[in-house]
Each structure stands twice: as structure tokens, then as C-alpha cells.
Length: 218
Image 1 (cartoon, rainbow, N blue to C red):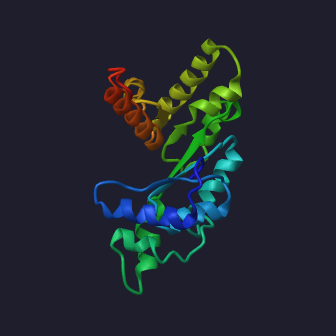
Image 2 (image 1 turned 135 degrees about the vertical axis):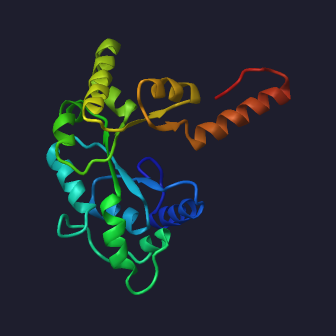
């Protein structure tokens, strides 16, 4: 949702579609840390949320609280759709969801600034974090320094995650890039995106139809 005009209604429909597949779990990348976005995603039945631009332990602590039911947190109670995605129905569905599913909702902060990278160890120390997701483009823009230095920043993030036994993810613009990141220990990978895949395939086939190129697009 962060970089697309997807409404909460459409997001809820997409979560239901993914959950019904039986082979994938819906994880929503919310557009901000605001309580309503976290609530809408989790109440729709998302198995987890990726939260943008987490930079401090206080921000992380607030996010965990918003995603955790009382008494440990302050997540609002009243999600009629979420229990159904976990096969829970009937008058006790919400209570059963709170007990059986609530504690296992995935909370994944995005680390995409120099401040977030510098505070990563403290962010992970908050507890309740299930993985981290690196935002490579925003992190690079935040740095605005030499290529060697940005490599050092990525290396420090990777080391902190490894030392803390924390799964780490990243957006990769292609399958080849995803493979190279997997070799570095990344396990939560986005290999390209739907728009790039559609446009590159369309361009490739159009050029082939014109007999102009045999170039392989990603």
C-alpha cells in the first residue's frame, strides 16, 4: 500500500484472496505507522505488516503495542473478518483469534534511513520484531554518500541482523538481484514487482514482433 493508491477496502479483498489460496500468507506493507493503517491491515486478516521508515526504539515500541492485544499491548479488539481467514468461526471466534493468532502476527519494520540503520540494534532490542526489511532506495537517498560507504551501511545492517538471529528481507529489482541477496543471507525477498514484470514482458514481445531485438528483459 505504501507506494500505490490501494484503499483499505481493496487491501482487505486482496488479503482475503491471498489467504484463500492455501499456499501463501498475506503480509501488508502499510503506508505509515499510523494506528488506523495497522488496524485495517490486521483486522482484514493479514498475517503480518511491514511498517515503513522505522528509525527509533520508541517508534518500534509503539508499533509493537499497536499490533499486540491487551494486556501486553493496545491493539483494538473487534476484527470480524480476521478470524475467518484462520478457520475460526462462531461466537468465540474473536476470543480464539486473540489467543491463538494474535501473539503470532508478524511485525516487520523497514530500515530505510541512516538513523534507522544506526539504531537497528536498539530497535531489535525492543522485542516483538519478527524480521526486518531493508528499503534500499530510500536508504541510498538518505545516505547521499559514496558507493563504498553505502556498502558499509548495508554490511552493518546485515551483520546486526545476523548477530541477533533476525531474518532480513529486501526489495530486489530482478531475479538475478534476488539470488545475489539470498547468497548474502536475505530470506524475505521481493523479486521485481508486477508493474516492472508487465512492462518489461510487453516491451520484449513488442520488439520481438517487430524483429528489432532479441534482448531478454527481466
